[in-house]
Image 1 (spheres, rainbow, N blue to C red):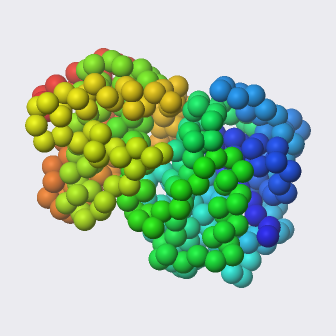
Image 2 (spheres, rainbow, N blue to C red; image 1 turned 45 degrees about the vertical axis):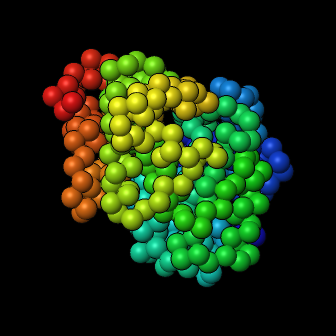
Image 3 (tube, rainbow, N blue to C red; image 1 turned 90 degrees about the vertical axis):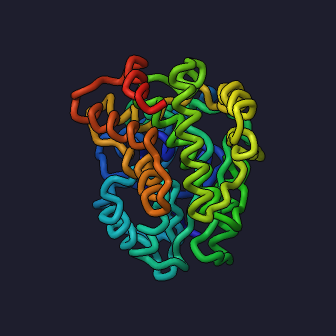
Length: 339
């Protein structure tokens, strides 16, 4: 089967390098000529917790001639419908898209190509793009940490389903999720809490988990995510074998204290991660806050569950985008009135 990765950002570079190292034949498609040129001239370069440089074939999206059976979508969600409509033209007649984006992007993909051609994958590891063609892997490089939660819109399986599992398994463990919305919500919980506060504070996941004032906020964001999911009839799935609800949810003061103590331990393997939203803020471009914390807030409104901490993160991040605020630990003061 012919397949491609669409998006030469932090995740696309790392995934491409792992696949190329294994001898896979595929294309990396991007809309940025600088990224395409860098990948073709120097290869996909990964630094950080692992070092590798692998030759890959990159194509500008205006020059695509192939028809692909599978396209892995790893771009930001901003302008998602336009991107999906564009890459749908690169698909074979029965080709599929596997979206590896944050949030709940499967609905957008299915709107363009249909439920039966839509697959989703929640990525449990993180990376930071340093420059075109070069990315820093910030997660532990063991297979268990470089994992994926994979599923389909309506439970469909088959040849392409199996091929996606084979491809992703080259890099890390793949957990097939029958309750895919629950797996997506697990990643959404992590992103809302740790990516949200990483962006607000301008720090890594480990740093905001260690600093007690920001950890208190993380704890409340997680609680809101769990409460909203429960009220929405969504069962949050474990992450890398860990039941986050059992570990971090609380209904009494003792469990609340325990969850507070556990938060830095729970994120230890990914403590070096720097939110992609923070990377966008630093580059002066819009980030995905409305597709991450914004989803929690929107679901909360639908089920009448207040989400003041997620709402405040959204408010602050939009101020970061406009330049009214800058990422700083000092921004935790804006949450004080919510406790």
